[in-house]
Amino acid sequence: MENLNYSLPVISAGYTKTQLKIAADTVVNDIIENGNALPAAEALSAMESFVKEVKGNKQYIDFVRDEIAKHGKSANTGSGTKIELAEVGTKYDFSKCEDPKLVDLQSMIEALNADLESRKDFLKTVPLSGLLVTDENTGETYKVYPPSKTSTSSYKVTIAK
Figure 1: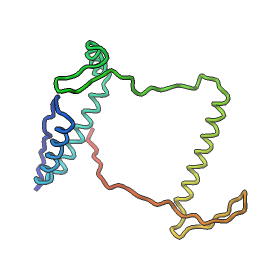
Figure 2: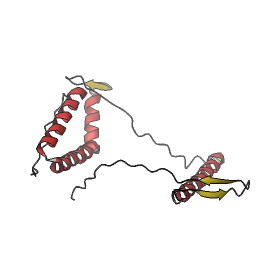
Figure 3: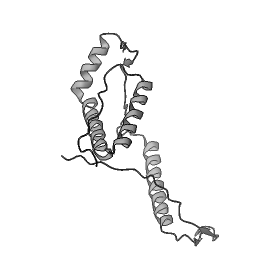
Figure 4: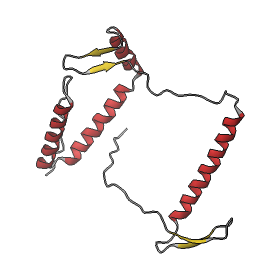
């Protein structure tokens, strides 16, 4: 019988990567031994969502940056973890450059990407036995085959709103 109430272990500051790996392996073994996979999957997804919300919160980010700045550009915790100021997600806006060469290249790329996607869509429809195709430019005939298809089996968790 599946345990419907599953709690994740408490992870506090000070864990090393090795200790986190050991803790994760222990949790996985516990889940398998006790048959509480679905509540554990729900709890892990909830925690993942929680961590994403906290780490993406601008007030939190600003506060942590201010705390780091009190130590210079980085701070080390008692366990040896280094937390440093960083510029992440740098973006450039080329829309105001008024460079005709850039505009031409971008147009060519967009046209090529559209052609590429169209060709891929076509190849997905080719039967497994292949299909004879004639190149309109050269008149050459060749046989094409559909792409091989692979997937990874996993699971998906949708947390209620």
